[in-house]
Image (tube, rainbow, N blue to C red; front, side):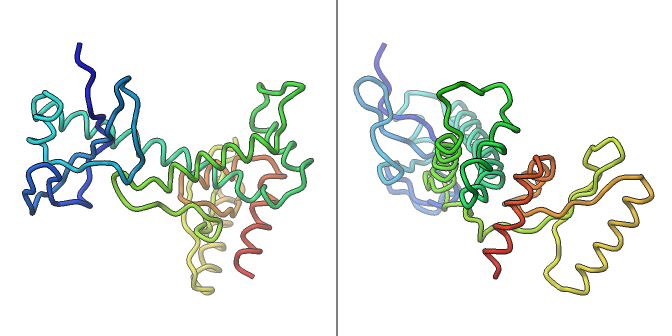
Length: 230
């Protein structure tokens, strides 16, 4: 069977001109990564071609419907990878400021089943962060996404009495609104016999992960937020 020359990486509205036929004003284009003779990706985001669906179908030998379905599926997978990367950065980026013992305590608290004699928690944290930042800096189907501690936002998380998340809301910047939100949250937590935690994260979903983390992770999360907003 003939080895394909392209791999669909997603679909984007960042490029409105077909890189094959030159047609302009397209609502979206398909991102195509070139492949080598063995079918492996042969390039970076700068080497990606952006084709209209009809040209992409011709290049791949597929139907337009198959191209569209595959492009949407690839874009959805990217969304999942981005979400995972945001969680890893929200949890582990503040720990880069921590000593090795705190990094180990936090890492193994979250990964209890991976402890081995030769596993170095500091190296694992660095590896996770490198991969997460690479994911969010990829520009194949859109601009780079926020990935720095400076991009974190504060979230207020209300827990129920059985330690389930009841509600997560972004903390407003206005001081009066912030105080009112905190008072309302404490009142609601008292009503459900729960608790309130404030954490910093890249998004709401990641905030939940940070709120569920061990005390060491949350302590460095707070320190990182304060350091980045000093």
